[in-house]
View 1 (cartoon, rainbow, N blue to C red):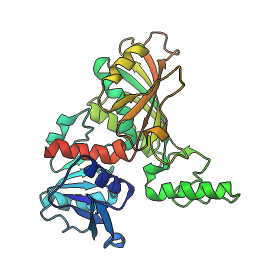
View 2: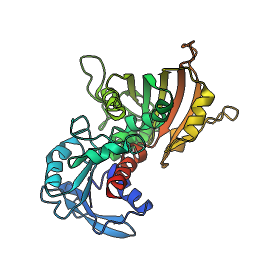
View 3: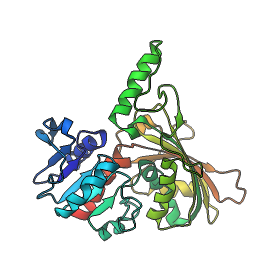
View 4: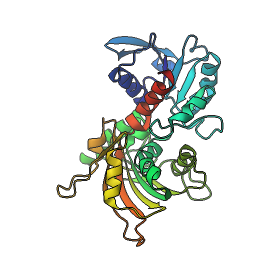
Length: 330
């Protein structure tokens, strides 16, 4: 097995999750850029030397989890497939390719079996939203989704998390926050997700949530609108979700469905005022769901509001990739 982008935030999380879930490949190859080659990483109680990622790095590799960005996936994933490996790709490089399955194991595990060498891992925000939406959709068809995201620095990698840390210290010390990774200061600030905006006014992250959800659900006409925002949180994304169902549904029905859903933990303590928070979702496998209430703007009873938090590095990326590995490798 190979982990590509092993020294990045998601790559390190992949290695940790493999260990936690008792997955022990006969041989583990850690791959990264030339500047990381030679570094030794602690894995499975020992150390493994990081090798430079090259087109000839995949001889004898059965499975490769890629977490090194879209450009490197485009460059090196075909070489891995040609060498006989099945690639699980965390980037956006192949997600919308017709012949590449886009998989959340709790939602469409059957799609993973139809791969041609590459299986795509969805966008983190897409995964976190749909862990809550899909179980409801299975009982009472969702006709419309309106979502606003509050996305942590972890979604932009380890350097972005460090930028939040250093900028926060600078601001508290009376110094200016100087952005390097992000286009704007992230400490004590929030801004539209740092991806290009298309002619329709949607940024790339918002389009991902729309297009990917339709593909995963096999619902090309599903009505979805998204607004994606960066917030000064280290880890775990949060999302406010408004749903319109085909038939009327009550908050109690929603709670009952979500209590039995895989990968979801209900956190909806109205009396105690305890609801999903990124600080509590961080480091956890389950997505936390709460603030479940009837949408009073939809008097026909078909509208529900809810709030979700999920760890972007775990279920939003590394954990989902490892679950796909478990699906296809047994």
